[in-house]
Image (cartoon, rainbow, N blue to C red):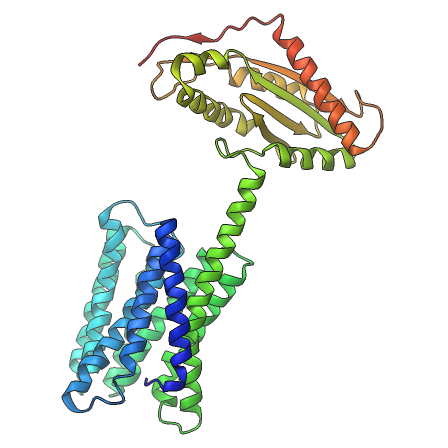
Length: 417
């Protein structure tokens, strides 16, 4: 495909958005941003090389043509393999799927060199099918994945057998971008604008490649398809930028309502949930305080204390049922809100914390817990949700301190590992 100068604004916009992504990556490095930057850089390089295809003639035309085809193919492979997911552990699993790119790049070389014989294309398709099954077997993927890839290569071989080499080359590109669209539809968060823009743009992009051999020479449809195809490069870039903004907004919202150390609800979210439970007519709360927590901090440092809070959270989290809220108020104080009877939960908590807690640098820690309960409507007179919540918390806190009195501070530290 060739690109007319009126498409330059899209290229300029892409450059600006890519520079913004570079700035974001430098301030807060993330794998997701890095993979998108690599893919979009290939897109931009291919777009720029397209401006030379109008002026370069003869044998010199082949080099920028192949370069552009390679850029489009590599960008599609990056979008399909690495964007929207964390990188797999290990060099082998990370880069082994890239073997699938080699036959695709060979296909684009054959087309870029204007090879007019079907044998090289068919041989490329056979090699590609073998690579697909080999990579899938090594990565223990479902057989449907290499079967689908081989079916796509079978279509390429059929086009080649009938002498339609342009269709064979652009079918490969279209298949890669269609796979990238499906991959990101499954990987990106549902219901987001960024996901809709990216998947929609990649789908149109894929369709442009698939239809290119037949609409390229049409005097009216061809130029319109050219503009639509070029616009998708800008929209994919814009969609990625929106995805990052949406992720950041969700992250900020999560931090505003959750404790950073344990991931539990913080005081703000706890109060919202408590008011909602009161409005529904039933709100039972437990306040938990770890006996001897200060001794752990003073003896082994705040790092050991933080680890203990995280491990206590991990032990108690499975006890929290649907419709219940587990929150950290601060320090070693926790709150549980439940619409159900809390007596079984109290006993389960004591059992869960009765065993030693193993920390990274401490051989064993035993810690017991003081618990105070307050029930609505059983313990609290009617009032506004704010008044009821305040009374519940004060009463549960008072009962928690009463629970501390007869129960000695029996935190036992059995030594350093």
